Length: 147
Image 1 (cartoon, one colour):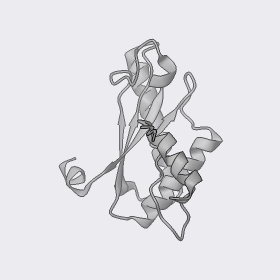
Image 2 (cartoon, rainbow, N blue to C red):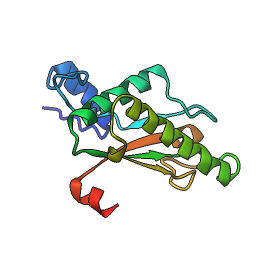
Image 3 (cartoon, rainbow, N blue to C red):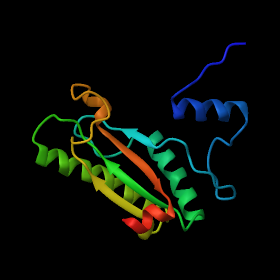
């Protein structure tokens, strides 16, 4: 017997959906937290594409139905250009996502926003596309009180 171990949550979630273990999208009647927690951006962009926006809307459905849940939105940029601008752009990415969640009915008190600029790269600094990202982190009650 061959066992394949995947260290990619997005691939695992997609496989679980295809196998029928979990539903493919959150609906108003059946909340589930979407597995995709990372979104990437084009150069000098701060808005999500249509498909990424749909996944963020699924997070909004979950957050509306779980009023005790809190989410921390981390905005990141690559290291191209001045760090002041990179911090501004990463904050712009995070606040744009927070604004979209609030437009979908998520309470502002459920959202924490941070812009890290290029100080927390996901990949090597020269792999700029991987570092231009937004990450969602669900906070536990204990973590929420500590912030």
